[in-house]
Image (cartoon, rainbow, N blue to C red; front, side, top):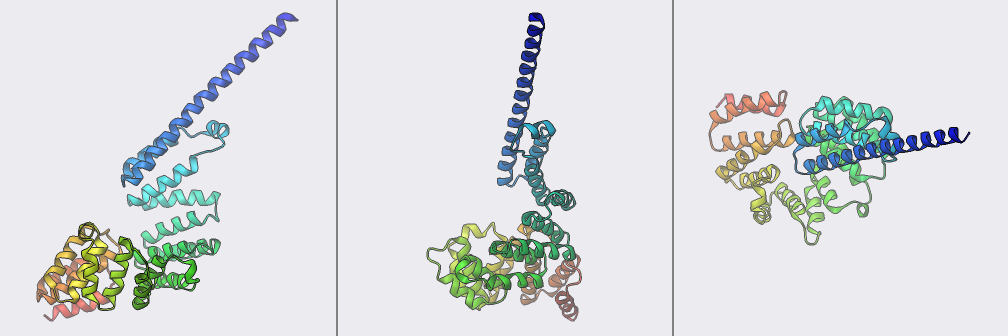
Length: 327
């Protein structure tokens, strides 16, 4: 009997050592997985989405059923969410959409996932799919005014001005005391209430660059071109790398009849603007308008043809083309 007990004790000890070794092995794997995820997040912050996606893919290799059972904090879903963001930033919209579809099967009422999937649809130009998902996310997350704001920005970015204004108007119905004045000021600008926007933004003490930029936008839209340029003069270095601010400066210069300077701003901004966006559409349209003012009708017509290829079906540009053909 003593021999049997000794054998059993030995087997238990061996099993315990083995289990500890297995646990230690997978704990090391889990640590490596976490390290890779951290590296990926750091690369995302730097804007290096391709390298970040590679790190996340490597981290996923460590994710399996054993590590999930041993760990109370699984990283699997986070890795897929981050990968989808990288795919989106790299223009791989279909890949990002597939990941969000899979995650939504697990979490069908997650407003972040719903908004993310809707954003992918918007980037693909499919507003019929995007808008209902955004509406669902907003209905679930009613108290989050930032979601309304972000949704409006997304709709505007991808050319759906009608729904963008609908979301911004919903935001403006919320008690002003509950909404950040910068966000409220921008929403007012987007729905065309520029005087109200200027009043809100001018009341902010010690404004940062974003607030000053919005204030300059509101002033420019009310025809105060000189005042807008004075505000932008304080951010000359930042303007060089910001297509939105270059577009605003170009518009202010255009309003003052300084057409050559305006054209230089638009030309500087265009390579920095993402294709297919409302900003790029605005810059291209503005460039055509300033060429007309410079009496370069041939150049305007040639650029209008480029515009028509990138943004087909634009009624305003079709009318502009008819005008240019008569010059």
